[in-house]
Length: 126
Length: 112
Image (cartoon, rainbow over all chains, first blue to last red; front, side, top):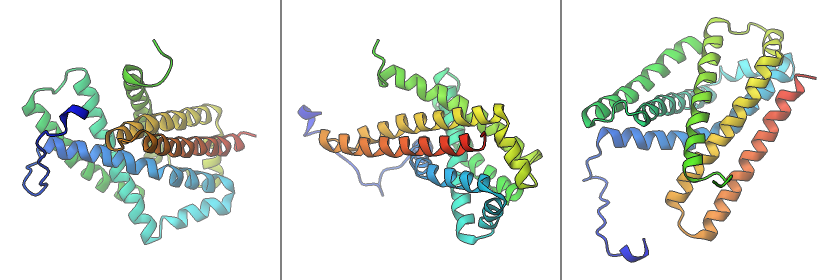
């Protein structure tokens, strides 16, 4: 890195055309960091739900609140995207879907399926 | 080979933990979809079932490990000064260890 200070840098994000693989990959990383931040929320909910019957009811009541619902749906989306993109990476590790056309197709598949999964889960769980 | 967690070893653990976490999540989603607890007692019974409880502890251990390797990769990509790296990674490591201790306490408590 030190001897390569003069390399050209082009970071005009408005003019860089991101391939769908890149968007999916950035989403995987971003979702991973957000899920890391969500860990204490999940543990807090688990603790409260196991504390006593009142705590269990409190958790149920939490899901009726609009703000918590929004946070929950967002976490679900991050989880679905990270999960599906992760499976795609594991498949690529074992040489499935390495060809550019297949990789682009599976990247679209990940992005769209994650949204569809969230829509289904919000119907089932909320 | 070093026992420390970097390079190929970290790469492998990232994938092994990913597979385990994915399987656990699938089971949890199936449980919540088809057999969701209807009362506090049912929920408590499920979590304090020894098999479920041990798997839950392993799940959170794998989650913390997976998060550590992933976050470390992110920090190494974007934070370039050694001092800053050490600082940020220490904070993340402490945060993750604290969370692991917290959830272990929550899960052990329902067993006793």
